[in-house]
Length: 212
Image (tube, rainbow, N blue to C red; front, side, top):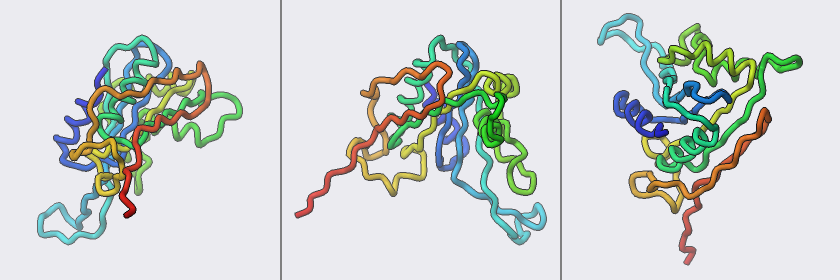
């Protein structure tokens, strides 16, 4: 499973810098994955749709949610794919959140909102009713229902290569282009079955400085 190609295709097509990448899966083998690219970019709002019209405000570019239909049989393979993508694209770490079903008794309302966002379904939550996410995910509604009932897993990382974090990097493991060579040397930590926990894979290493 290789999600790096999909990420780089989108970066190349849009020409926009990334703030973060998230990957969402339900704990059911061979179900599609939702890859969401969170852009750090703004567009001008004008009084009219004309080049000479005056700009009145700036608004953020919506995130892009894509459906990945690659087959998989174990969550460890999805975990490995997310870890490998974060490693090669220069992220400082990859965080994995294991979330419980949000339709269970006593669940907080915030959990339902997080579930919507994880599956790219929060399309009307932007300011003034504008879409916060533009989704190309035909099965997102069904996946959202599964995630709400059975729980889901969410991976998140902030890439240096193709992202906004290049000027702030302080990492001895990165090449000049903000990437690392494959494969990722870290071993995966199996997700808990039906658990509710957070796992952080630390990938970077602070750069050593000569203090003399």
